[in-house]
Length: 85
Image (tube, rainbow, N blue to C red):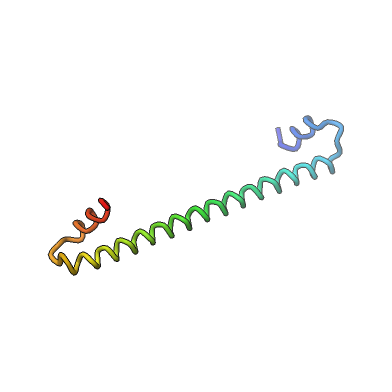
């Protein structure tokens, strides 16, 4: 059964114009919710990117400082050291 037929049965006695208006409102609400969720997702993604870039900068500063002190260490040792901080 088509969606419009289900709505006609649910809302018997209402005009087609009323049904289409109701469906239009429902669709607009769903579209608004999708846009809200997309914006929320983008904000979370940007927050994660910023957080990761701050972590990377902190690591780069730490590694740069340590390279001058322990020039013979492997980069993986610096990463392990940094993660233990």
